[in-house]
Length: 321
Image 1 (cartoon, one colour):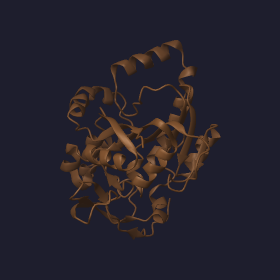
Image 2 (image 1 turned 90 degrees about the vertical axis):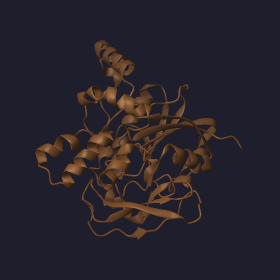
Image 3 (image 1 turned 180 degrees about the horizontal axis):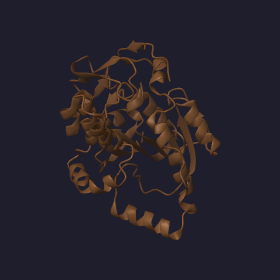
């Protein structure tokens, strides 16, 4: 486990360059690993973007990403589709036809060169390689990057801000629940645009701070994940951020899952000192919803139609000069 010394904090201005005009929303703490620190959310009164301020400076962030950090474990490579039987592949195809969760939905483009930012242990790289893509990755965690490299993938260790230039441009860049973790999202997205061919695509997912669970649960919200999440976007503010960074937003998909809602209920039960047997199902659901995700699908579909499921996938294209 990381050292539990207090992190070094820094203050930050609105990344969209707005004059200082903020309001304080609420404060909370690290609920993933119970590490020290109390963190406040502030909203820019001009553009509406919500940020964690003060926040750990980059040199202190590593303590909040231990080796058992959830995405590192959940992205481990599983059995490839090509190794499954015909019956297994048919069941997978039928499942995809019936249930579109919108979590990692991609633009309809021919396979080419893809970069995944925050590729963790390489699970999505493996899927895209099997689909005919040439893949590369960037990963902050050395251990997770080593796991991906052990499976044969070309992965650079570091943050977007620290990685040097690539010798090629990409047709598609993806980042699943990554942008909200970045200290300089405008600079990072501009850098991604410089790595993308003219007309190339970007697909990212972020939590949605415009959903009802953000307002209802406040500091107990599952999607907060403080201080790992440095920014908290709405469809309006992620669109503004992308436009400032050299991208043109094309479409926003709201995820048809209830992970944030049920996880937030679990956090609230913890705050109320409810018994462990009652808390556990809510806290385990976001990581292993399984068949319950199918049972909740009709409700999730309805809430997603109104933009209220708490997570969204955004498609953008590199803007022309």
